[in-house]
Image 1: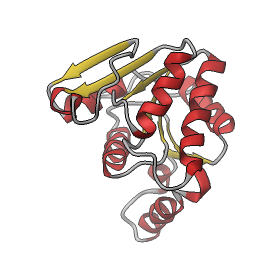
Image 2 (image 1 turned 180 degrees about the vertical axis):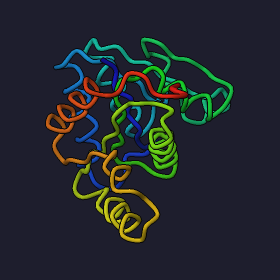
Image 3 (image 1 turned 60 degrees about the vertical axis):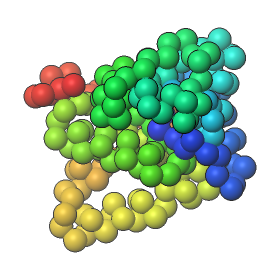
Image 4 (image 1 turned 180 degrees about the horizontal axis):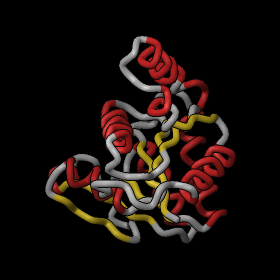
Length: 190
């Protein structure tokens, strides 16, 4: 199993975000799962990747060439793949993963998350998508999700594609269960 983690190239102001990244890394190592992520060596990206790699886990970093120096690519990945664009990066991250998880991050994390949700809604992939809601970080997004349903812009079954929990092990259990029960043949699957 491979878990794609979307997360910040910064650590944020709350130390619990770094702790959450480390907890995800520890849980990946415990389960023997691989990490797929954006290839950066700084912020939460670097923290989770280094911890998995240093613990003997498999780490696949996927980074656009123009960001390799800007995000200070983590060259010590098991596999570091340079790609020509952000679009190719996002597509390859999904293709190389069985499940997708967003932990705290900024605009880049939101971009990756929303594209993954949209692609899932359109049937382009069948990976379950989770939010690690560390210290309520994703509470505003979860409220917005409910608001979009209330206002008729999102169907409830699409809103339910997003699984959220504050506890790493429980969330990965939910994603793992959903992954093993996902439809195997979706039209246009990437």
